[in-house]
Length: 444
Image 1 (spheres, rainbow, N blue to C red):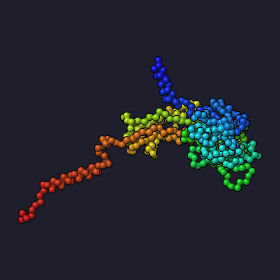
Image 2 (image 1 turned 135 degrees about the vertical axis):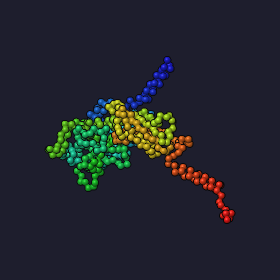
Image 3 (image 1 turned 90 degrees about the vertical axis):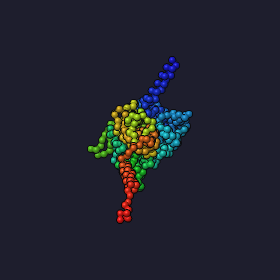
Image 4 (image 1 turned 45 degrees about the vertical axis):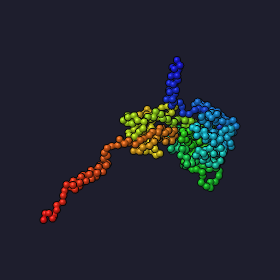
């Protein structure tokens, strides 16, 4: 009986390990740092939508001394929402360094700012590759704003398209209704290649102070004005930074939209596109979509010969199974852009994988004529999708002394030279030994 229980336990553990991909990629425990309790009321629709999706929200004032991200070495939350743009300091065990460590350990963060942006959120964003404009500035667009803002500075923008390089896995294209946005503009630091715009300003947008004469070039203009930014870290943690906290407010979510323009060009919508847009970016930020994982790695010689160490110039079969998290379950990933690299310091082989529409990716390639320690590396660097890992390290040996070809075609000239020398030496020796020169005096 005891042996049966042990066997059953081993089977359960084996199934759990082999079917581990059935678990969701990210947890639901979420800490929400707010500027004041008023945020819970003015942004209640957003928070209720998160709770409806199963997120367990824990609210805390940003300056509370009781805030903790981890306890006894374990994190208490999977996600962090910061809705405290003007907080002068974060309380408790939360600070810029601890939030960066939170991200480095694979967790997700959603940050919202506004024109009253203070130091901690600004510093945190800068560490992540996003530089906000000065406090008190707004993004202004005199051609793309809501008609209700006609006499108020043209800061309530109507954005009808996501950034040009934002793929549909993050934001559904096209937006069904314009997104209403009001806040502070930002630019992206060129040194951070992991950050990218999700929502950008139009060609007529610029960042400046209201009712102030512009005497120098604004912090950002046109599409360089980043309104909402995403970051996909190499450890697959995700960050979304919005320059507008009003983007998530009940007022803009439920508001109608009337784009400014001539009577014939003006468009009206009964409801803004904020709700759908927010749902998209939150699902991406908290890893509800755009997450792919690889499993079932196999590689072997094409002729089926078993060998723990490969040999140079062997034909090798490689295969891997890749799944995508979609609508709460794992489904086969379908893409013609997944590659495998055979790397020893630098890639010696880069091959595009074929797939069978069921998540199985495969290819065959010849091992290069170089021996050493090589690593299989999956490559699928596409914005919005998680990174795939390095898979396995293998050894590649040279030919043994008895495995080289006896006669190499390229060496035929040398073979011919050797045999011609041997033949010539034989003729010379025969002539020298058996041919006597004629004595001219005797003949006289």
